[in-house]
Amino acid sequence: MRIDKALVVYNKPLYQLHVLEQKDPHYIGLLKKKHPTTRLWRAVHAMHQETLEGVQRTLELLGIETDTVFRGQLKKIGNYDLVVTVGGDGTFLDISHILGNQVLLGVNSAPIDSTGALCRARVGDFLTVLVELIAGKRRPQWIPRLQVKVNGKAVAPPVLNEVLFANQSSAGTARYRVLIGKTAEEQKSSGIWIAAPTGSTAAIRSAGGKPMPLTKPAMQYVVRELFPEPGKRFRIRKGILPKGKKLTIYSRMRQGALFIDGNKISVPLNFGDKVEISADGKPLRAVL
Image (tube, rainbow, N blue to C red; front, side, top):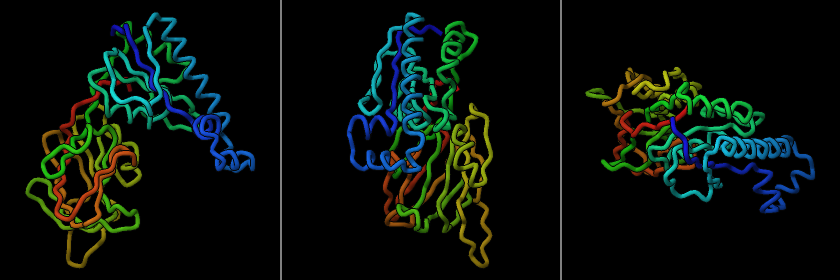
């Protein structure tokens, strides 16, 4: 792979954002009181800064022209061969939503506080990963993503991890009619997880799903906490649907919602809205 120009997109840890920059009295107060939730703040900040600087030095060492931007200021991505995220899975997911055909590579900037399941590199092996990419010993993969439509219109960018169909209130019951092919059921539950292959090891796995190969063109669904009704036998509980097949849901709630790749993208649903989800989203070119 030829890499002439790269974009580095970084996040800001809580300590940097709320203490050093915003000087928020609430967060400063927690830090002064040595609140247990602040235990790792300084260490995470130091590790993050070290990673960001290490990534920049490595790209410079290899002669790659590089731009660097904070993820909160990035609106669109220009002409780059490689986009490197420095942060955790949240940063990787955010950037995947606005990426074109560029290759995406995640660097976990603070492993002591971040899972980084989507981040292939850390600062210690970033150079090795880059050299392997340039030499052709490692190749980007095309990763399947989900397509989400409401009433026939796309309402979100291609989904890399998962979609949660649920009540807008986490304590509320989800009421809906669900269809797969000719099978249709009316259900009450805590909602439905629908995951792409990369999301199959996350929340849906905790709900009873199973891991899928990263490049498998398919999606998985799991109904959460299905309400048992006397005399009813439910067939749509969990399963895997290949590309080309869709899961259709009719909302029977006035305050339903779709939560996409976490909680930053949400789509409100009214009573009667038709949701269609499939594994037909534009695939992502990434190093995983």
